[in-house]
Amino acid sequence: MAFILDDILLAPCKFVTWIGRTLYDQALAEVTDESVIRERLLDLQTRLELEQIGEDEYIKQENALMRRLNEIHKYKERRALGAARKE
Image (cartoon, rainbow, N blue to C red; front, side):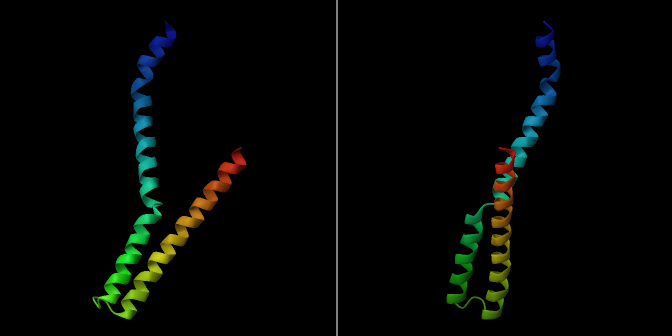
């Protein structure tokens, strides 16, 4: 009986925790999605070839995107190392 009562009383807290974890996981997936960065790099290359942007602007934006891609790789490596240590 006590366990059923605990489940009923703690259900709202568990639900809020579940929502928080779900939102965190979704945000993390979006922030660490390499395909978005790669698409932007391809779009940037296309814009350069179509002469919609100049070489200087291309280099500036490409460097920013490559830095972001490197940050994602470093984050994933750190996360993998942390997961391996826990095992």
